[in-house]
Image 1 (cartoon, rainbow, N blue to C red):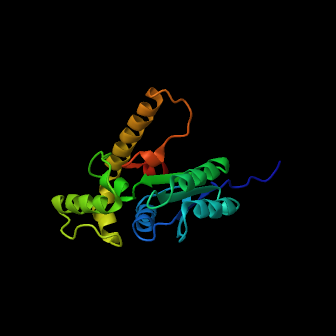
Image 2: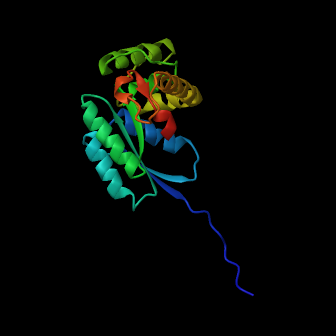
Image 3: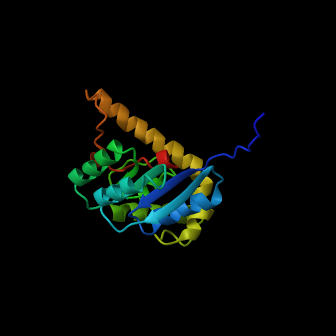
Length: 198
């Protein structure tokens, strides 16, 4: 009779690469610190465009069995965004994308949001929402405290709101006669699929 061995659960290694030095990195680190998970999560900032970020993620696949890239539309061309997304899809890398900026995801903590805005306008809207909801400091990208005090308690709302807008946009796309999976994410402003990573 063989010796019984203790089976320990294998932890999944999840690597999140982002080119957002403050908001995105702080948000995902706070999420990791405040929620229990079977995943061993590492959040890393890389100062690079989306395509270089995904290329780095591909190299990291041997280190972590799950790798996600988090990036925004920002000033990057549609072509470079779609190249990054295609490379990610080909290599099994997840992409959490926001158009125009990560603040769309943060606004989703308060309400469904799909109005076309640039990054500065999104920050102004978020600043107003925070003040209206009792956070007198308003919005600053490097404020880690606001994530734990305000955003994380509203996480379920954010997931729901982002998913509703995502499903609505996909349905409109399919009803327009398109049946492929090449969603025009760069045309969908404001939009985020960060809820898929969360």
